[in-house]
Length: 402
Image (cartoon, rainbow, N blue to C red; front, side, top):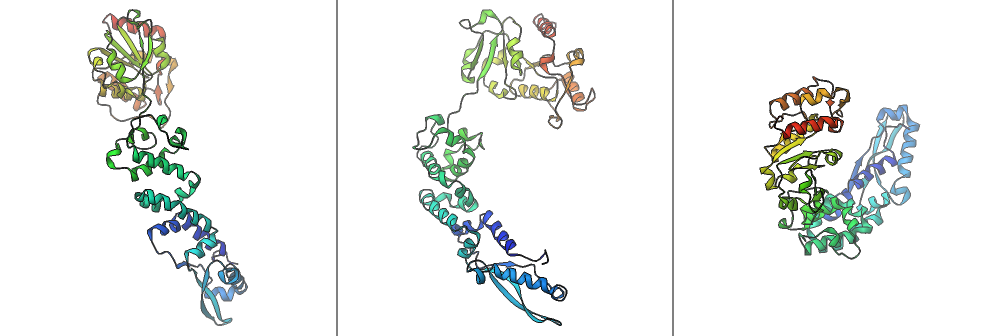
Protein backbone atom coordinates (compact mmCIF):
# COMPACT_ATOMS: atom_id res chain seq x y z
CA UNK A 1 0.00 0.00 0.00
CA UNK A 2 1.33 3.43 -0.93
CA UNK A 3 2.31 5.35 2.19
CA UNK A 4 0.93 8.62 0.82
CA UNK A 5 -2.68 7.37 0.60
CA UNK A 6 -4.99 8.26 3.48
CA UNK A 7 -5.52 5.47 6.03
CA UNK A 8 -8.27 4.98 8.63
CA UNK A 9 -5.73 5.90 11.32
CA UNK A 10 -5.00 9.20 9.55
CA UNK A 11 -8.72 9.95 9.28
CA UNK A 12 -9.10 9.51 13.01
CA UNK A 13 -5.96 11.55 13.67
CA UNK A 14 -7.26 14.46 11.59
CA UNK A 15 -10.54 14.39 13.48
CA UNK A 16 -8.65 14.15 16.77
CA UNK A 17 -6.78 17.35 15.95
CA UNK A 18 -10.14 19.11 15.72
CA UNK A 19 -11.00 17.72 19.14
CA UNK A 20 -7.67 18.82 20.62
CA UNK A 21 -8.19 22.34 19.26
CA UNK A 22 -11.52 22.37 21.08
CA UNK A 23 -13.54 22.76 17.87
CA UNK A 24 -16.09 20.04 18.63
CA UNK A 25 -16.86 21.21 22.15
CA UNK A 26 -16.82 24.91 21.26
CA UNK A 27 -19.44 24.31 18.57
CA UNK A 28 -21.82 22.97 21.23
CA UNK A 29 -21.89 26.49 22.71
CA UNK A 30 -21.37 28.68 19.68
CA UNK A 31 -23.90 26.95 17.45
CA UNK A 32 -21.37 26.65 14.63
CA UNK A 33 -22.40 23.91 12.19
CA UNK A 34 -19.43 21.56 11.81
CA UNK A 35 -21.40 18.60 10.49
CA UNK A 36 -21.77 16.97 8.11
CA UNK A 37 -17.97 17.18 7.91
CA UNK A 38 -16.05 16.30 4.77
CA UNK A 39 -12.42 15.18 4.87
CA UNK A 40 -10.43 15.01 1.70
CA UNK A 41 -8.54 11.89 0.78
CA UNK A 42 -5.08 11.38 -0.59
CA UNK A 43 -6.03 8.61 -2.99
CA UNK A 44 -4.65 6.56 -5.88
CA UNK A 45 -4.54 8.07 -9.34
CA UNK A 46 -5.57 6.47 -12.62
CA UNK A 47 -1.98 5.45 -13.28
CA UNK A 48 -1.86 3.75 -9.87
CA UNK A 49 -4.67 1.43 -11.00
CA UNK A 50 -2.43 0.07 -13.72
CA UNK A 51 0.88 0.03 -11.84
CA UNK A 52 -0.33 -0.89 -8.32
CA UNK A 53 -3.70 -2.51 -8.75
CA UNK A 54 -3.27 -4.97 -5.85
CA UNK A 55 -2.11 -2.14 -3.55
CA UNK A 56 -5.11 -0.03 -4.55
CA UNK A 57 -7.45 -2.93 -3.79
CA UNK A 58 -5.82 -3.45 -0.36
CA UNK A 59 -6.18 0.27 0.38
CA UNK A 60 -9.88 0.19 -0.52
CA UNK A 61 -10.43 -2.82 1.73
CA UNK A 62 -8.66 -1.16 4.65
CA UNK A 63 -10.63 2.06 4.22
CA UNK A 64 -13.93 0.16 3.99
CA UNK A 65 -13.05 -1.92 7.07
CA UNK A 66 -12.73 1.26 9.17
CA UNK A 67 -15.96 2.79 7.96
CA UNK A 68 -19.42 2.90 9.49
CA UNK A 69 -20.52 0.46 6.79
CA UNK A 70 -18.29 -2.24 8.29
CA UNK A 71 -18.18 -1.25 11.97
CA UNK A 72 -21.50 0.45 12.55
CA UNK A 73 -19.63 3.51 13.80
CA UNK A 74 -17.21 5.82 12.07
CA UNK A 75 -17.07 7.60 8.76
CA UNK A 76 -18.94 7.24 5.50
CA UNK A 77 -17.16 6.85 2.19
CA UNK A 78 -18.14 8.80 -0.91
CA UNK A 79 -17.44 6.66 -3.98
CA UNK A 80 -16.72 7.62 -7.55
CA UNK A 81 -16.25 5.42 -10.58
CA UNK A 82 -12.90 5.60 -12.36
CA UNK A 83 -12.52 4.05 -15.81
CA UNK A 84 -9.26 2.31 -16.70
CA UNK A 85 -8.33 0.89 -20.11
CA UNK A 86 -7.02 -2.38 -18.57
CA UNK A 87 -9.04 -2.85 -15.39
CA UNK A 88 -12.25 -1.30 -16.64
CA UNK A 89 -14.57 0.69 -14.39
CA UNK A 90 -13.72 0.67 -10.67
CA UNK A 91 -15.41 2.32 -7.71
CA UNK A 92 -12.84 4.28 -5.68
CA UNK A 93 -13.20 6.17 -2.39
CA UNK A 94 -13.31 9.87 -3.26
CA UNK A 95 -13.98 11.62 0.07
CA UNK A 96 -14.78 10.89 3.69
CA UNK A 97 -17.93 12.18 5.37
CA UNK A 98 -18.74 12.29 9.07
CA UNK A 99 -22.49 12.92 9.14
CA UNK A 100 -23.05 14.10 12.71
CA UNK A 101 -21.26 15.19 15.85
CA UNK A 102 -22.43 11.96 17.47
CA UNK A 103 -20.60 9.97 14.76
CA UNK A 104 -17.42 11.97 15.39
CA UNK A 105 -17.59 11.49 19.15
CA UNK A 106 -18.16 7.75 18.76
CA UNK A 107 -15.23 7.45 16.36
CA UNK A 108 -12.96 9.27 18.80
CA UNK A 109 -14.33 7.61 21.94
CA UNK A 110 -15.15 11.04 23.39
CA UNK A 111 -18.90 10.80 23.95
CA UNK A 112 -18.57 10.70 27.75
CA UNK A 113 -16.20 13.69 27.66
CA UNK A 114 -18.76 15.67 25.69
CA UNK A 115 -21.50 14.73 28.16
CA UNK A 116 -19.29 15.81 31.06
CA UNK A 117 -18.60 19.09 29.27
CA UNK A 118 -22.35 19.72 28.97
CA UNK A 119 -22.83 18.85 32.65
CA UNK A 120 -20.17 21.39 33.64
CA UNK A 121 -21.42 24.08 31.28
CA UNK A 122 -24.94 24.08 32.70
CA UNK A 123 -24.12 25.37 36.24
CA UNK A 124 -21.27 27.49 34.95
CA UNK A 125 -23.34 29.49 32.50
CA UNK A 126 -26.29 29.62 34.88
CA UNK A 127 -24.12 31.34 37.49
CA UNK A 128 -21.78 33.23 35.14
CA UNK A 129 -23.27 33.87 31.68
CA UNK A 130 -20.26 36.09 30.90
CA UNK A 131 -18.07 32.97 30.74
CA UNK A 132 -19.66 31.73 27.51
CA UNK A 133 -17.08 33.46 25.31
CA UNK A 134 -14.22 32.10 27.46
CA UNK A 135 -15.63 28.56 27.29
CA UNK A 136 -15.90 28.77 23.52
CA UNK A 137 -12.24 29.79 23.33
CA UNK A 138 -11.01 27.27 25.92
CA UNK A 139 -13.46 24.38 26.22
CA UNK A 140 -10.81 21.80 27.03
CA UNK A 141 -9.49 23.84 29.97
CA UNK A 142 -12.74 23.31 31.81
CA UNK A 143 -12.83 19.63 30.89
CA UNK A 144 -9.26 19.13 32.12
CA UNK A 145 -10.27 20.68 35.46
CA UNK A 146 -13.56 18.80 35.73
CA UNK A 147 -12.94 17.36 39.22
CA UNK A 148 -12.07 20.72 40.72
CA UNK A 149 -14.42 22.88 38.63
CA UNK A 150 -17.06 23.25 41.38
CA UNK A 151 -14.37 24.70 43.66
CA UNK A 152 -13.24 27.06 40.91
CA UNK A 153 -16.82 28.29 40.55
CA UNK A 154 -16.96 28.77 44.33
CA UNK A 155 -13.91 31.04 44.13
CA UNK A 156 -15.50 33.09 41.35
CA UNK A 157 -18.73 33.38 43.33
CA UNK A 158 -16.84 34.60 46.41
CA UNK A 159 -14.98 37.31 44.50
CA UNK A 160 -18.19 38.33 42.75
CA UNK A 161 -19.93 38.76 46.12
CA UNK A 162 -16.85 40.36 47.74
CA UNK A 163 -14.96 42.31 45.05
CA UNK A 164 -11.57 43.67 46.10
CA UNK A 165 -11.82 42.15 49.59
CA UNK A 166 -8.78 43.98 50.98
CA UNK A 167 -7.64 41.02 53.09
CA UNK A 168 -4.93 38.40 52.83
CA UNK A 169 -5.77 35.37 50.74
CA UNK A 170 -5.31 33.28 53.91
CA UNK A 171 -8.29 35.10 55.45
CA UNK A 172 -10.77 34.09 52.75
CA UNK A 173 -13.15 31.32 53.84
CA UNK A 174 -14.64 29.27 50.99
CA UNK A 175 -15.92 25.78 51.85
CA UNK A 176 -13.63 23.15 50.38
CA UNK A 177 -11.12 25.71 49.09
CA UNK A 178 -7.83 26.51 50.79
CA UNK A 179 -5.18 29.13 50.12
CA UNK A 180 -2.91 26.75 48.20
CA UNK A 181 -5.75 25.81 45.84
CA UNK A 182 -6.11 29.44 44.76
CA UNK A 183 -2.37 30.16 44.69
CA UNK A 184 -1.72 27.18 42.42
CA UNK A 185 -4.42 28.31 39.94
CA UNK A 186 -3.86 32.06 39.80
CA UNK A 187 -3.35 32.07 36.04
CA UNK A 188 -6.60 30.27 35.29
CA UNK A 189 -8.58 32.12 37.96
CA UNK A 190 -7.29 35.41 36.61
CA UNK A 191 -8.71 34.64 33.16
CA UNK A 192 -12.08 33.77 34.68
CA UNK A 193 -12.23 36.66 37.12
CA UNK A 194 -11.48 39.10 34.31
CA UNK A 195 -14.58 37.79 32.56
CA UNK A 196 -17.00 37.82 35.50
CA UNK A 197 -15.96 40.84 37.58
CA UNK A 198 -16.93 44.44 36.84
CA UNK A 199 -14.14 46.68 35.54
CA UNK A 200 -14.06 48.63 38.82
CA UNK A 201 -13.01 45.45 40.68
CA UNK A 202 -9.91 44.89 38.53
CA UNK A 203 -6.64 46.80 38.84
CA UNK A 204 -5.38 46.57 35.28
CA UNK A 205 -1.93 47.85 36.26
CA UNK A 206 -1.15 44.36 37.57
CA UNK A 207 -1.25 41.24 35.43
CA UNK A 208 -0.29 37.58 35.38
CA UNK A 209 0.03 35.19 38.28
CA UNK A 210 2.51 37.45 40.08
CA UNK A 211 0.09 40.37 39.96
CA UNK A 212 -2.94 38.34 41.09
CA UNK A 213 -3.23 39.86 44.56
CA UNK A 214 -2.98 43.47 43.43
CA UNK A 215 -5.23 42.91 40.40
CA UNK A 216 -8.13 41.57 42.48
CA UNK A 217 -7.72 43.61 45.65
CA UNK A 218 -5.98 41.19 48.01
CA UNK A 219 -3.39 42.27 50.54
CA UNK A 220 0.15 41.11 49.86
CA UNK A 221 3.03 40.26 52.13
CA UNK A 222 4.79 43.60 52.60
CA UNK A 223 8.08 44.05 50.78
CA UNK A 224 10.47 44.68 53.65
CA UNK A 225 13.40 47.07 53.63
CA UNK A 226 16.34 45.59 55.52
CA UNK A 227 18.90 47.99 56.97
CA UNK A 228 21.66 48.28 59.57
CA UNK A 229 22.36 51.30 61.69
CA UNK A 230 26.13 51.84 61.38
CA UNK A 231 26.48 54.18 64.36
CA UNK A 232 26.03 52.52 67.79
CA UNK A 233 24.70 55.83 69.09
CA UNK A 234 21.68 55.41 66.80
CA UNK A 235 20.73 51.84 67.78
CA UNK A 236 17.01 51.44 68.52
CA UNK A 237 16.70 49.81 71.96
CA UNK A 238 20.01 48.11 71.27
CA UNK A 239 18.92 46.87 67.83
CA UNK A 240 20.96 47.65 64.72
CA UNK A 241 19.79 45.11 62.07
CA UNK A 242 16.12 45.66 61.24
CA UNK A 243 13.55 44.96 58.50
CA UNK A 244 10.51 47.20 58.08
CA UNK A 245 7.69 47.68 55.55
CA UNK A 246 8.32 50.79 53.43
CA UNK A 247 5.58 52.81 55.14
CA UNK A 248 7.12 52.15 58.58
CA UNK A 249 10.63 52.83 57.28
CA UNK A 250 9.31 56.17 55.97
CA UNK A 251 8.14 57.06 59.51
CA UNK A 252 11.46 56.11 61.09
CA UNK A 253 13.27 59.32 60.07
CA UNK A 254 16.54 58.53 61.88
CA UNK A 255 19.14 61.28 62.49
CA UNK A 256 21.54 60.04 59.79
CA UNK A 257 23.63 62.05 57.36
CA UNK A 258 24.57 59.22 54.99
CA UNK A 259 22.66 56.25 53.63
CA UNK A 260 24.53 53.48 51.82
CA UNK A 261 22.74 51.08 49.49
CA UNK A 262 24.36 47.79 48.51
CA UNK A 263 23.01 44.71 46.75
CA UNK A 264 24.93 42.00 48.54
CA UNK A 265 23.51 40.95 51.92
CA UNK A 266 26.85 39.89 53.36
CA UNK A 267 28.32 43.26 52.42
CA UNK A 268 25.43 44.89 54.24
CA UNK A 269 26.02 42.78 57.32
CA UNK A 270 29.78 43.38 57.27
CA UNK A 271 29.60 47.08 56.40
CA UNK A 272 32.00 49.01 58.66
CA UNK A 273 30.67 51.24 61.42
CA UNK A 274 30.23 54.77 60.14
CA UNK A 275 29.12 57.84 62.13
CA UNK A 276 25.56 59.05 61.51
CA UNK A 277 24.94 56.47 58.80
CA UNK A 278 22.96 53.36 57.93
CA UNK A 279 23.15 50.80 55.13
CA UNK A 280 20.22 49.36 53.16
CA UNK A 281 20.88 46.00 51.50
CA UNK A 282 19.34 43.20 49.48
CA UNK A 283 16.97 45.28 47.33
CA UNK A 284 18.51 44.49 43.93
CA UNK A 285 16.23 45.98 41.27
CA UNK A 286 13.54 46.69 43.92
CA UNK A 287 14.80 50.20 44.52
CA UNK A 288 11.38 51.69 43.79
CA UNK A 289 10.52 50.77 47.39
CA UNK A 290 12.66 53.77 48.40
CA UNK A 291 10.84 56.24 46.17
CA UNK A 292 8.37 57.36 48.82
CA UNK A 293 10.76 57.66 51.78
CA UNK A 294 10.78 61.47 52.22
CA UNK A 295 13.68 61.70 54.67
CA UNK A 296 16.06 60.06 52.19
CA UNK A 297 15.93 63.32 50.24
CA UNK A 298 17.87 65.15 52.97
CA UNK A 299 20.67 62.58 53.32
CA UNK A 300 23.66 61.76 51.16
CA UNK A 301 22.93 58.53 49.24
CA UNK A 302 25.77 56.23 48.15
CA UNK A 303 25.05 53.20 45.96
CA UNK A 304 27.58 50.33 45.92
CA UNK A 305 27.02 47.71 43.25
CA UNK A 306 29.04 45.30 41.14
CA UNK A 307 31.32 46.85 38.54
CA UNK A 308 29.51 45.33 35.59
CA UNK A 309 26.69 46.27 33.25
CA UNK A 310 24.00 45.19 35.75
CA UNK A 311 25.60 47.22 38.54
CA UNK A 312 25.52 50.41 36.47
CA UNK A 313 21.97 49.65 35.31
CA UNK A 314 20.85 49.45 38.94
CA UNK A 315 22.73 52.67 39.72
CA UNK A 316 20.80 54.28 36.87
CA UNK A 317 17.55 52.94 38.34
CA UNK A 318 18.47 54.20 41.80
CA UNK A 319 18.92 57.72 40.42
CA UNK A 320 15.50 57.45 38.83
CA UNK A 321 14.05 57.38 42.36
CA UNK A 322 16.83 59.20 44.23
CA UNK A 323 18.51 61.59 41.77
CA UNK A 324 21.22 62.74 44.20
CA UNK A 325 22.67 59.20 44.56
CA UNK A 326 26.45 58.94 44.32
CA UNK A 327 28.26 55.75 43.31
CA UNK A 328 30.63 54.07 45.75
CA UNK A 329 33.51 51.74 44.80
CA UNK A 330 32.32 51.62 41.19
CA UNK A 331 35.31 53.34 39.60
CA UNK A 332 38.40 52.47 37.54
CA UNK A 333 40.75 52.69 40.51
CA UNK A 334 38.78 50.04 42.40
CA UNK A 335 38.47 47.88 39.27
CA UNK A 336 42.18 47.87 38.39
CA UNK A 337 43.28 47.45 42.02
CA UNK A 338 41.48 44.07 41.97
CA UNK A 339 42.49 42.77 38.54
CA UNK A 340 43.26 39.21 39.80
CA UNK A 341 39.65 38.94 41.01
CA UNK A 342 37.93 39.89 37.78
CA UNK A 343 35.21 37.56 36.55
CA UNK A 344 32.75 37.37 33.65
CA UNK A 345 29.10 38.28 33.34
CA UNK A 346 26.81 35.56 31.92
CA UNK A 347 26.59 35.74 28.15
CA UNK A 348 23.40 37.14 26.63
CA UNK A 349 22.09 38.66 29.88
CA UNK A 350 23.76 42.05 29.94
CA UNK A 351 21.80 45.33 29.74
CA UNK A 352 23.79 47.16 27.05
CA UNK A 353 21.56 50.16 26.38
CA UNK A 354 22.44 53.79 27.01
CA UNK A 355 22.15 54.96 30.63
CA UNK A 356 21.36 58.68 30.72
CA UNK A 357 21.77 59.20 34.48
CA UNK A 358 25.43 58.18 34.75
CA UNK A 359 28.07 60.89 35.17
CA UNK A 360 30.98 61.11 32.74
CA UNK A 361 33.46 58.77 34.51
CA UNK A 362 30.73 56.22 35.20
CA UNK A 363 29.46 56.34 31.62
CA UNK A 364 32.97 55.91 30.21
CA UNK A 365 33.58 52.83 32.37
CA UNK A 366 30.13 51.43 31.58
CA UNK A 367 30.71 51.82 27.85
CA UNK A 368 34.11 50.12 28.15
CA UNK A 369 32.38 47.19 29.82
CA UNK A 370 29.63 47.07 27.19
CA UNK A 371 32.15 47.11 24.34
CA UNK A 372 34.45 44.55 26.06
CA UNK A 373 37.36 47.00 25.77
CA UNK A 374 38.84 45.84 29.09
CA UNK A 375 38.07 42.14 28.64
CA UNK A 376 35.28 39.86 27.51
CA UNK A 377 32.11 40.39 29.64
CA UNK A 378 34.33 41.72 32.44
CA UNK A 379 32.93 42.18 35.93
CA UNK A 380 34.16 42.78 39.45
CA UNK A 381 31.63 41.59 42.00
CA UNK A 382 31.36 43.78 45.07
CA UNK A 383 32.11 40.96 47.51
CA UNK A 384 35.53 40.47 45.85
CA UNK A 385 36.71 43.94 46.83
CA UNK A 386 39.18 43.86 49.71
CA UNK A 387 37.71 44.85 53.04
CA UNK A 388 40.64 47.15 53.76
CA UNK A 389 39.93 48.94 50.48
CA UNK A 390 36.30 49.38 51.60
CA UNK A 391 37.31 50.82 54.97
CA UNK A 392 39.84 53.20 53.40
CA UNK A 393 37.23 54.42 50.92
CA UNK A 394 34.72 55.09 53.71
CA UNK A 395 37.36 56.88 55.77
CA UNK A 396 38.20 59.06 52.77
CA UNK A 397 34.49 59.73 52.23
CA UNK A 398 33.96 60.75 55.87
CA UNK A 399 36.94 63.07 55.78
CA UNK A 400 35.70 64.74 52.63
CA UNK A 401 38.58 63.50 50.45
CA UNK A 402 36.37 61.23 48.30
